[in-house]
Length: 411
Image 1: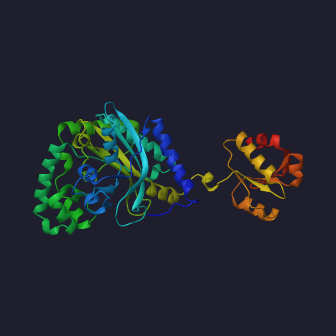
Image 2: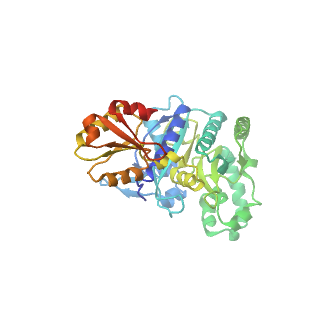
């Protein structure tokens, strides 16, 4: 778990504002849920035999003896909130942002307290909404300037019956080759065999090359849904690759699953992932409700933006103008600063506090990254004027009346 320091926060603010504005343009509304939930919520929703529930959750008993857990992901809490607050009597397009918590080995772009944006859509059963959220994320990559560095992988898990039939065929295939599996995959073979498809062990992946293919077991409805999604993405010009081994790590997924992946951080990593979970609302006590969503890791996205060098230059500048006050002019300087903030709401103005020589204040003005130093000495204070010194371009400084300063800066 790490601190986010002042020199890092502008990048996060840029990512947060870009995402929240994009979601608003598509008609999505923000929801905020607690960081702490009853442990049962995650064991029911995520699945007892997933890595998250088995190994990664921060779980403890509170003072009344109830088992509580810091949220490891956002979907379960959003579904609980939607059921409890009767939001599901009509379609809902929701988004959220905040910290999640998993006790796992930290690695590049991954921490034990990490931050996610998530989107959850309820009440829309067709492939059109699957397509919309993928088209929306494709637009996000273009806005951020990383579209060439991410690619979309797609799969369909089918319905519960087709998954059960596939699971049986996969277990039969792997059971006959059990001794060739790595230890982790042997354990999963008994409890969650589909997760073996996601194994990072090269020998296991080689073994899986001859395994039955999930797409061959799809029911007709899931196949039609998947074909419809592919047709919509083709029409929208969103490229994708079919990955029949893509299963995702959570039990609630069915039909569409997807991952946006990148190799710009070294080994291939996931930037954004999700899919359909049509049975989860009913499983958690609500009425049967179709649902689809995704989660997007902010740490990894920020790391990508920095690695690829696509962050806007303005993020390096914290202020637009720096007010230098020399002599006994504090009241005049403060009044001038407040007038400017009133007249120019967009202006980022930092006023120097604590005194100091003209030379030391000008050094701080330059270090701030501001375009302009606004200088008020005793002469300026007496005459109601301000001297404007250009810090980033070759222009002579000029002294103007305070009343004209806003117009000059606006220009």
